[in-house]
Image (cartoon, rainbow, N blue to C red; front, side, top):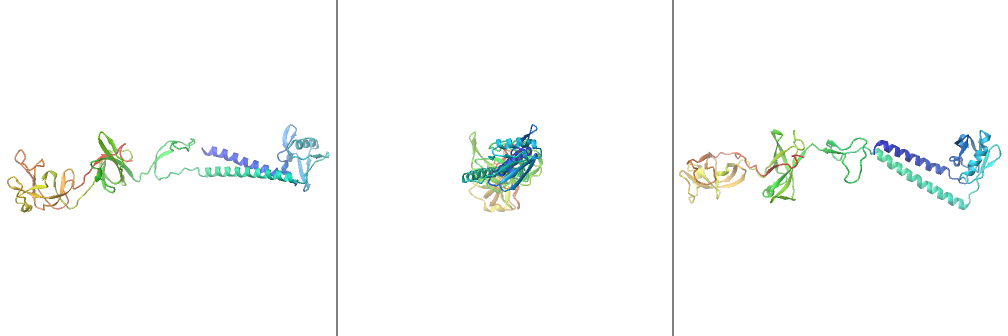
Length: 370
């Protein structure tokens, strides 16, 4: 409902209140009251005219009203109008004026008046309450959004009638662009490694020159199974959104674990049993396992591994700075087909390659960040 409709409704309510007030004024009690004549009109030259507009009304005593018309020819018309009204008093016409004598109230008349006053009071209160409700609605006409944000789309325009029933059309869509959310579906084999608070690296197809950082805010336990594979939705929040916009396609890489200041070697350098092939002149060769047969010039040492990604794995013990690690393209201990073996020098400091970042990644369903 627009403001014009409210104004019409408000005018109707005000008229209702005025009508009830007139009812109060027209109640005939035991005293003379000129207001009882307000609703009586006289046929004056073909037009219904209120008595107050064709003469003067006086009250010489508390129980008498005297109507003196300015045109004596209308006395008969005034007398007839009063007789045909519901006033209940017989007018006395002395050819100069009309006298109305109000009789003393009887007990029956008092009860009747009490009912009239109570009914008029109830009607007045009902009209006042309706008026107050209308004014409150008009004062609260401004619609306030439950959140601060940017209006993305509007479904209605000024002047449209909007229903307040459940399931009705929304007025508009508002996004809080102070942060964005995206949801990725994580495979059941990896979901147990995902925890709230883990860091996420995000890349967007439309913004190739920058990566964004997010954090896992929710890991749902309600999985969806399709094609024999179950996935679980993981919600990620992005505070520094840069040029990201709702609906962009994006990819997320969740860091499930990380290691600082660790020795790292290629995954292919670790063979079954957690052994690593090193040159005989490496410092860690002193801890060689004599039960393992190694190629000429190399020995196997036992290591303890830690965090890994697709390319590198951290070694927490068994190797030290200065060791030369040998490995082939496969994770076996054999020499490659051309008889050559790749070697790398282990140095101290942060892990090489991925350094422990890893875990599932995937684009947000339905078009990326939300």
